[in-house]
Amino acid sequence: MTPRTVPLVALALLLLTGEQRAPAQTSLPIPPREQRAFALGLALQAPAARAEVFLEAVRGLRAADMDDNSNAPIRRLAQQAAELRQAEARGYSEASRLLRAMGAPSNVRGWADGAARLLSAPPVMSKDARATLKTDPDTAAVLAAIDEAEAVKLIADRHAPALGAWLKLSGGGADIWAATLGRMAAGMRIASATGKPFLLPRETVRHLRQSAPPGTPLDVLRALSTLAPRGKGNLSYLVSLTAVTVPPETVAAPAQTFIDAYNAQPLADALTGPA
Image (cartoon, rainbow, N blue to C red; front, side, top):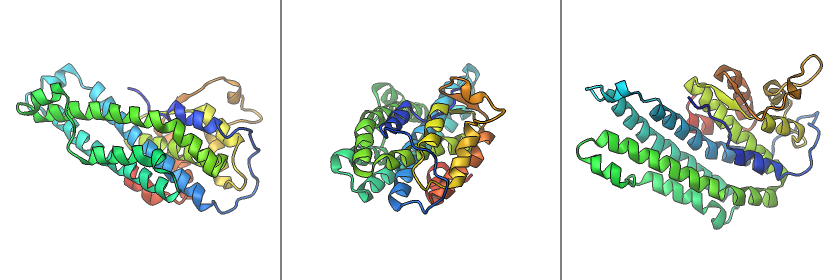
């Protein structure tokens, strides 16, 4: 079982912000652009997190499942594959819409457009998948979904540096901060919804807490502190851990705090399912 986490590229994007700032002590309305940046992070991470849920289910398939004459395990995976494609298409379509609203040029947002179109069309099948299509369409659908999930991840990872550079140039560190928080919230929300452990990126959490933009809501700062506590009587912050596996119930409330603060409830429900 492999817990889900924010990709390492998210931390790299966050470090583009440069100098660290002390957390704000007062709360101001979050600017609309930062709300969009949070939503963008959520829209980009939700498909990746859901794909990992599917791939984990595939990896968990046992030999006994393959011998099941009813073929029920494979049929369930085929259904998950169909649902995954729909969820991925929604996520990248929403990411493209947000990038357009934020003024991103076509060379920054084009890959998201392409991913959404790819996932909305019939799946492209490999030679192995096509060979089983007529005799075992469920297996063919699962094989195609595996290939597609991995291909889309490669596309997203390849374009992440350019996206981070554009966010910093156009909106400054606050945009990258909000997008990174949105990514983390998506992974936390899906871990909570599926009841699976979450690989909490403590290094990212600490950096978010220490570099919060002025006016960050106090609830958000407190939620970050609960994820990576620090203070008198608590020495956990001295342990050099890049990430730590935590139970899903640990991240449910902080994720909801982030989503509420950035007015992202409808999008979170659409991309990750109700809490």
